[in-house]
Image (cartoon, rainbow, N blue to C red):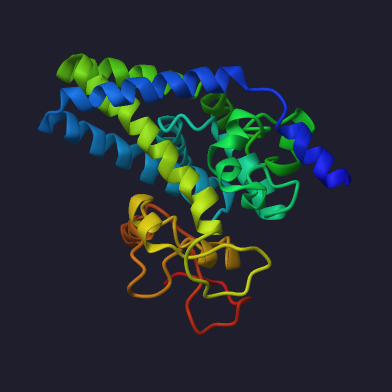
Amino acid sequence: MQNIVDFKAKREGLNWDSFIAIGIFHVLAIGALFTFSWANLTAFLFMWWFAGSLGIGLGYHRLLTHRGFKAPKWLEYFFTFCGTLALQAGAVKWVTTHRIHHAHTETDKDPHSPRNGTYWAHIGWIMRGTSQEHDDATIRKYAPDLIKDPVIVFLSRWYWASAIVAGIVLYSIGGYSMVLWGVFARTVFGWHMTWLVNSATHLWGTRRFETRDDSTNNALIAAVTWGEGWHNNHHAQPTSARHGLAWYEFDINWMTIWLLQKVGLVTDVRVYNLGEQPSQLKRAA
């Protein structure tokens, strides 16, 4: 009974700041459709890769949250800056949320548990739930490593400013229509692709590992999230920098990490290979 009461309490009231901001972005993203050009599409794709792959996939997720590899501080800060462009909160709050998700997957403590409904897991938790807002005690518990770094804290506090900088740059190149595509349409698209990992990959797909949650591997979602859709693999081996474990599991984020390792920019890359015992997580050669 207490669990039901707690969940109902989460759904009471609307997070008006999030609701208004998300609504405005969606309206302007629709407006972008009336200003198509190949230059605008190029800006969209470049910014999507910058924010979604380098920022969220490599930076916020595989590096800062799970420490699947090590990078020099300048590169870690670059990835973190890229992550701010996704407008999914600063790194400190994003990492806190994701670590809570892994610690309490699909329980009432999971911020976006799909067992509370697909809508809830996709966007409801942002509109009516805790969203990315955590008190200081929770942040100290789940992200103590990040709050010790003043640069990460600074980038997290002012994460929204990167979108303004990007908007100014895009406007100087291609006018307001490029801003619509490179900031608003790209951000909305990136939001929904990331939220699909929270919702759809806990509902539809295949399972290689018998994890304690309902996570699945979903090739379609992996294709639109640069490899983050191999979610069952990830929940089974969360610190592995490689999510696509089979040859047919295309994982662009892993390919980027592999390439960066080959040129000496990242080290201590953690990988899980099929056929090994679940506890055998090795450093990539």
